[in-house]
Image (tube, rainbow, N blue to C red; front, side, top):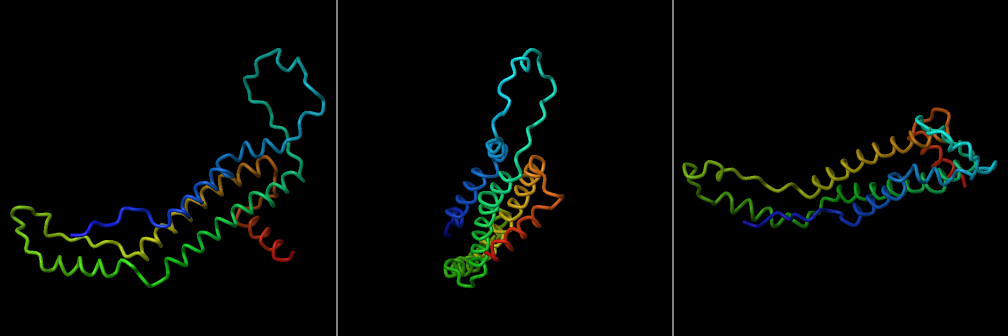
Length: 183
């Protein structure tokens, strides 16, 4: 009986998604902190005279810097990842399956097999491998769910620091896409 392939599908694309998320979304706080203009007043030594139990108020980020970050970094990254997921979804819809012949051979071999279920009650069961299109579709579906969770978390942090009029991330991304189409 042939062994099911354990190698993950779409490894380069999955690696790209993981790397892109790690670079932009996982380090969003550091990215936003990098947008803050250094103190204009200079260092105040009295600020260290007492221990600060409550976290200090975060300095606001200039609106231009926030908008530039969202337009040139965040939304660009999200759009690229969306493009990769759309490509993978298109591949998942491709009806040609290179594993079809091996699965059919497995199935025929399984039908011919004689099993004594008294010796091994589980040996009579046959678990066919998942069709390539189904496994790719499941992978893309899972990656899209992960992407939605990550974007919601990232957008929450961005709106906390930059403010954005109560837009959801989907609305903000769609507005950005529309503005990119008009350029």
